[in-house]
Length: 363
Ligand code: M6R
Image (cartoon, rainbow, N blue to C red):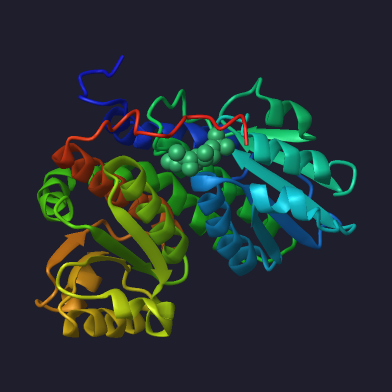
């Protein structure tokens, strides 16, 4: 049932305020003022975290690496399951291994889990299906509470994965004494405000639909981001290519000069994800390099960022200002809407894109 939407994807995008609120409800205390994750999610003796997944779930893990390292001071290694499983890397004591999978049935992720089991101190899964193989074979499964996701392009599962992984990073920080004074309470209160801010980002639907008409004419689109916006740029490019069939690539903004800038001309729209944070000025200079070569920049930012970016940017998409740690979750919304409306403008099969399956249970 598409609940009045033309596609499951658009329904699932719209469901995100509720889905994220459900994930928060599951892992916060009743008053929302404390974490309420299972006691078995124990960080005692954990020296490093290993995260393994595929596709969108892999980008959720890459995002979590920034959180775990910055908030909890815990080193994180992230790998693509198909690479990890055949490399069969050594797993040293003190490793907490995390496997992220919406379906819980992805063959490569399951194989990677089986390699790690018995070697890591503890194996945690983050899935959307309680009875799935990955959930059953992990020591501890954390449900993301997204509800069934039908569209092949993952949307609400991604933001719910991010929500749960962020809570896990906060738990690690708490256990390691990395958050002083009110720092944890402040972050939890920012998280509780997130569903309403996601609703604010969903209001940009019309603006993004309009910008998507131009993207639909492009042969190639680039996505750029720094810091927490880099994994999101990767996710934005994946979303666009899988449903609109437009060639889309993402780069860390700082890598532009090391090769990708050669691709820029006036036919290549460049989507830049950049809240006004400590890295913003560096991103502005990357944008200027793009514009100097005729590239059309679509900047997704907050109100201070839009003001600082100036007028010459082709399109400014202004999302609500949120706590800096929450930007990957909020900025996922415009990335999803942009891909969705581009695909609709091109007339592709949004929910069942060619050559793709919802769950990749064979290699
Ligand atoms: O079920 P999983 O989370 O393990 O699936 C992983 C990927 O196959 C999946 O995220 C895929 O990349 C999506 N189609 C992306 O939208």
